[in-house]
Image (cartoon, rainbow, N blue to C red; front, side):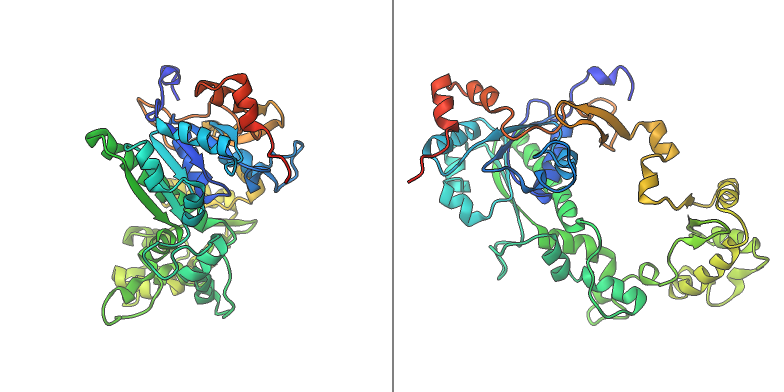
Length: 404
């Protein structure tokens, strides 16, 4: 980022977001809003967001996943079952631009935080409800986490189509949560854009099941998009077992011949001339159907040189190619080091840690890291005093309820 841009504000500077979300689906989306400059006030109860706990953190309550998902936010600890705390929440929402939550609808309504209640306080509120399943279907209101959404979406069947093992398996990533979080981000931005143009708020529902199914099936519905189906479900190229990193003399590379020129160039290294004259590979459609054969031929070629040799050669001939990093290697990748992607920061409680910088560059309204993830309730007094509460009133709001 240029020095000039470091003095500029993010695109969402001045936007107030009250964030009542936990785990990954909600916080991933709200962190993007915070990176873009919004004032995101994270409201937590009890022991806080459960993602504070996993990992070997030196500071309890500030685990690695929480650190990665909650930078640029302020933490307000409220027991919303207390009348005083709920009143403070209503006051907080009265001038908010966005109420962003993944609490189930029934729970919100029991707390007095349903859309009808909040829009009565603040008609211009953009109320973003991150749910497991769309409320207008039979699953509406069901509890959902990443695993159950992966299962329901059919993605747990995807690996079976690659290796023939019939056992359903999860993708080893919290991929449904993060995908749905991205949908929640753009939904919020669309709501804010509508509010900017009309002055009107609205209720927005972001269901994880539908969001992730859209993400997964956009290519994998494939020939079942037609009625009746005209071929396989799942994109042929993606599920071919030979679509994998290719072995070299000393490691693995990823190389993607895509255009006809690419295919002929790489086959030339194996002494295979006129590959595109073969009827199996003459057209894009036929190459897709027979992609596994081509990939098998490529791996026989890549085994003949080292990884470094191939990376250099492929760059010279213009083929997309990268060495295969282990996860531990990524933080030291030369490109990411040069761009400062993994920023070494000093957290006031945790100490040194890595934070990943916002990946999108904005020329005029830069996104960035302003503050580290907060301790639970770190901004209680700051936020509540900003609402006009006295010290005594703040003490009453934050006091633990008396045991019956």
